Image (cartoon, rainbow, N blue to C red; front, side):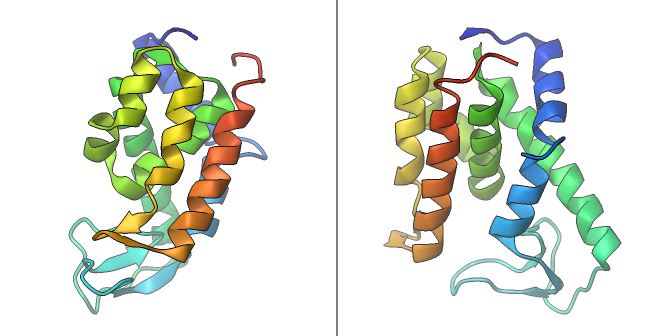
Length: 165
């Protein structure tokens, strides 16, 4: 992997959100959409649309268009946030999987993870190997997270053989 410049970080986020492999399509499928705020898992916080939690209160509603706008904004913010922490530019497939993980666990957790330490040591395979470990909520393994992480892991590994974008 080559050093990750600020200009390339923004370009890679844009590329990750475009085309047939768009991270937006993956996030929409993984997160599911609810137009009315709800608690997804006992002990979690109010959530709306495609997993948005910031400022959400139970009883809140959003239109489909508002949900899509929130997804695009949030995916962009998370993509730029995790890219900011990366020293090396991963291949597009790997970056898309990292964006999905970062969107789900949050930028802070991503940027303070063993996955990032391995990526910043130029160990893409080792970084990919960390993805399946993020399959728990409050210490309890969730089947939905296990299958989501398996998909993200498989996509990350595609980056090991794909050319740089």
